[in-house]
Image (tube, rainbow, N blue to C red):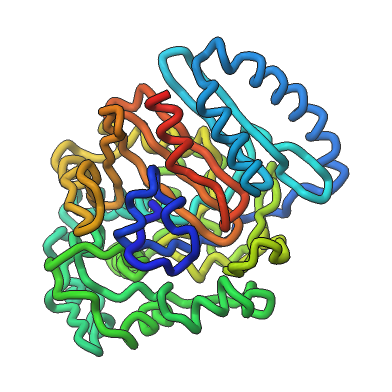
Length: 413
C-alpha cells in the first residue's frame, strides 16, 4: 500500500487507502509487462465498445449502490488523472466503473479487462509463495536472512544474522529502502527517466544500494516500509527453489487460479493487450509540468517488490482465494494476518501483516488488501475478511488522485 514516513514522492498521502498511511513509509516502483500495447486502430475500435459499456454501467450505478464510488472516479479525473477504472464484487454481483481515458492521444476509454501495473500488490504474491514454502517445511519464518543469503545484508550497520524472514515480510527489519536513494530515484522516476527507462537492474544491485545507507532501526524495533525487504524475499525464493520468484508465482498461484491476465514480466518493457497508457510528471512539483507517457519501462527496478501486471478481476480472485484459505494452510494464513502497528503518527485501525494490509474504516468496516504506486500507475485492492465485498481499481497517473476516497466511498457510501 502506499505507506510512507517521508514524502519520497509528492502527494504520498493520496497513495494510502485513506491517506493516514502517509506517516509510515512506502515508495513502490513496479514497471512493465509482456506484449505490446494496443495500436491506434485497435484503440479506436475499442473506444466504441467502451463507450457503450461505460454508458450502461453509468446508468446502472444508482440501482446497484455504487454511485459514491463512481463520483470518486469522476473526481479523480477532474483532479487530473487521465483515466480511472474500478471493479466491484458484492452480493449484487459485479459492477464496473470508469472515468476518463486510457489513452490521451486516441481518446480510447478504459475497459473493464484492461491490464495495468500493480506495483506493490506484488508483495502479497511473493509473501504467499514464501508461506507456502514454510508450510512445506522448506524454510522457517524465523530463519535469518544470513542463513539463506550469506553476506548479502551487511555494511553500514546492516547485519543479516539478526534479521529474519518474518521481519522482511512485515517490514520490521529496519533495512534501508533502496528506492529512497536519491540518485537511484532520479534515474528511475525523475529527470533521468528518459535515459534509464530501459535499464536492467539486478536484485544484488538494488540490495547493494540499500546497504550503502544505514538501517532505520535495529531489527524488530519498529516498522518502516522498505522495498528492499521484498527484493531479498524474492532472492530467498530463488535460493530455496532454484527458480526465479516469477516462475514460482506462476506455478503456485497464477496457474492453479487461472489468472490469465496476471504476469511477472521479468525484463519485458511492454504492456499486454488490452491495456491503456501510463502517465507521469516525473516528480515535478509544477502543476503545469509536462505529462510524459511512461508506459514502457524495465520492471527489474522493482523486481519482487513490485513488478507484476494484472487486471481487476484477477486481483479480486487472488485476494479472495487467499483470504478464504485456498492458497495457504490455516497456520500460515494466520501468520500472514498477524499484523504489526505502523508506528507513531498513524491512526489506530491500521496493521501490516506478511504482505497484507488491514484497515478499519471510519464507518467500522474492516478491510484487507494492498496498494501500490509506480510510474504512471496507482492501484489498490480492498475487501472484507470473507471476500464477499471487494474493489480493485487503478489510476493511470502517479501525481494525483485520492485512492483512499475511492475505498471509503465503496465500503462506507
